[in-house]
Image (cartoon, rainbow over all chains, first blue to last red):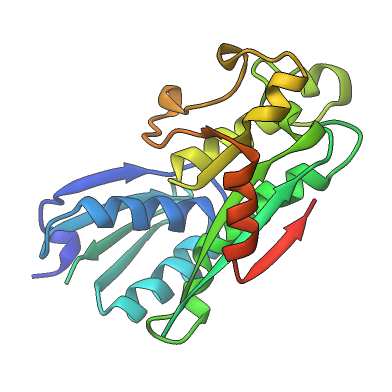
Length: 82
Length: 137
């Protein structure tokens, strides 16, 4: 099942924050998340949503999905902790 | 595989210069560079306020009112929100007659859990001697 179709363990809202805050706050939230948990992030910073956060997930081996909500102007990001 | 420690030593006044702002910005940004490093490598920043630089830690700064820029107050709180280690020189706050309750020591109002530490200069000197890279701002 896609990550976006599962109930997230936790959701954080970093709307209005620019790089590097979305990634650092994501890392902080992931530290507290149990293994296998899903973190949902609301983010409107393109550099974070399309570059730094997916790059971090790839490096950590975490599952990652992004849904761009064109009408709302932000992304919903889903990360599953390994 | 190693963690490089970065020390940012802030000596500049909060206003009329970008130095202390740049120190905070670089320290915060350094917490994300691991995505560009080899696996297992990381960096760990610590920010120390000494000399006149301790004035950056005052609460209720009026930077927006007088200079039209955001104050260091919010930058320091953001650092604490991100669990950054922030140290303030005890001897210098005493020399300037500052009380602890006049200083930004926590970021509880924005959900931060980490607190800034008021420490003797000898402890800051220990940081300066132990970090891999040192930047005076």
